[in-house]
Amino acid sequence: MPVDENIRKLLAKTEVFLHPDAFTIVSIDRMHEEKARRLLQDLKAFSSITFDLAEVSLVVKAGEWAGLREGFDDYEEEGPYRLITFDIVLDLSIVGFLATVSDRLAEEGISIYALSTFLRDHILIRSEDAERAFEALQGLIDRCKEE
View (tube, rainbow, N blue to C red):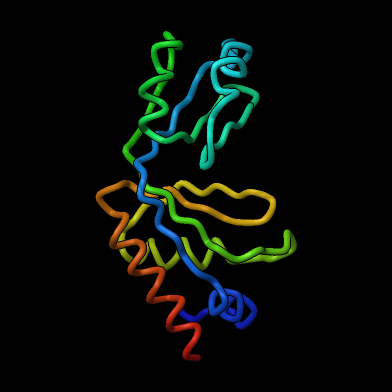
């Protein structure tokens, strides 16, 4: 698949980092928002909490969640996942970076759970697919550097 020239230049400067920890994705009913705020206030990097209209959504290290889950009586969880961080600061006006990443992983049959922060993009990959995803992305980056 051809890569847009602007995205190619960004990918050529990108480093990917595969975090060693296992992560869990959790959904907690919004009615438990205050409890979630209280119990989750000490989470360490990397973690993500999103207060949606219908849920409190978490991405948290599996070990941390194991210690927190007993505080919640109603939740859904998925995992284990591994986190891949794209170590490049992306301007918020960039169009197509994650689409290109997603397309490359879709070619490999790998599902992603995307997260963006102000400066960087991240994806969660099922643990069993993480190494293959990392290699596919590193291959994409290497190809972009050569072109």
